[in-house]
Length: 340
Ligand code: AQP
Image (cartoon, rainbow, N blue to C red; front, top):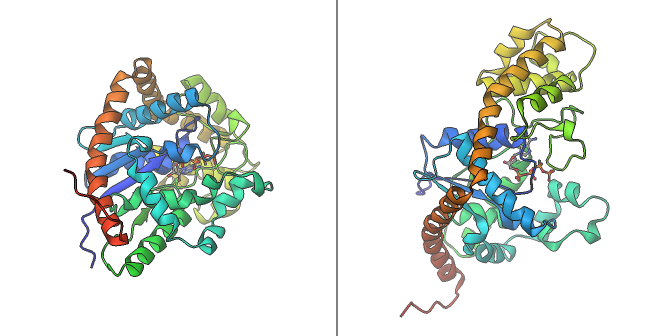
């Protein structure tokens, strides 16, 4: 039995084009967890620079992700929202964990292989050790639960392995908890609207592939209208969706936005044409995402409120991180001079 108190941590990169996949896979679940857990939600700017970011855009995108957290319903007073660079202990713990994690473990990470592509020699060293920084983000707060989309499962498993090796290496069996991924809801892997076999992603060259949190109602409706389909009517069982990626994606998005189980949504649209589903999905998406985008826009018009929430959150995050980092330094054997 772990003696650690339950605590939630998760992060989103400020790399622009925040989309429906980020919302349904992560941010919507952040909001739900606030009722049951103390939560820290981080704009992970240190992760973003593993691929070059224009500095002015990085500042803008950092505020935009924080605005998305708040607009979606995260309460920055009851919980903590902050950007990673304001808490330098993330980088400090990441260094220690670089020395705990093994090369062989990182070599298995599929996200690095996908993001580095064929030209692996030209990828930044940061992109390669990204999962160690992610483990540091979580363990710095001894977080026990991490709400993420399906694509992050392998990184959380690595964080568990790193936590366990640290505990074993330094003979402190309960030093770090084993963080649990929370991959929840009917849309844990939202797919591209142009290709139901590809993940919806910020970097897809086609803007039609994703619905962004700042799309206007007209843009949302247009993208759903143009979404790829297949020629058949919608199926009447969930298992039939295995062979129907585009139907699976649109029905999954509908279920997640409506907060309903997928089976009920499949029943409702069984035998209908895609056009009916698209019409109702456009209406639902506009009603649910539209107000969040409008509130994000309002917060971004004068970002002083967002900046204040991030500064206040960083100070409170740092108070937790400082205590854990002192324990880490002591465990590793770093000499610490007490403050005068
Ligand atoms: N398509 C998705 N479906 C469900 N969840 C998703 N997430 C990302 N894409 C989907 C979840 O969103 C959270 C924040 O992700 P991130 O900021 O780390 O961004 P990312 O994974 O780099 O986003 P993209 O869109 O996948 O970017 P690129 O274009 O770089 O590949 C995470 O919890 C993630 O699981």
